[in-house]
Image (cartoon, rainbow, N blue to C red):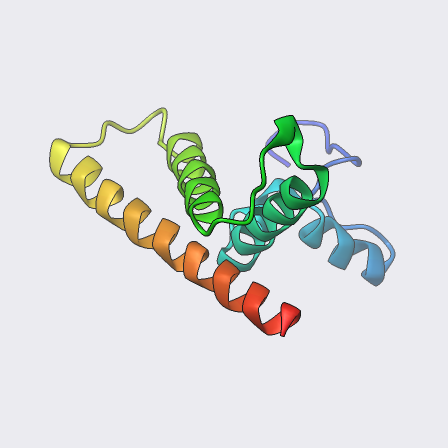
Length: 119
């Protein structure tokens, strides 16, 4: 198509196997860019830090998942900033507010999920 050779190894190129096509859409970086992916990432990181007791620190305080949520969501916000389009100050302010809200949403999901799993 369009004179370009088709890349058979691409994440979104169809495969002969329907199950492989599902896997190509699921096992991508975009999966972590979803609410559930970000909540899983933060929850998983927090549990790993609690198990490892990295640097002699105990990661049981709820401030840790809040910090991790902020780091993950801010990283996604910077990573998804368009390169070819100029964003206005108003758009950046809106994105900052949305980033804050998403960080809190992920934090509350992780805390609720942790409380549910641990009893």
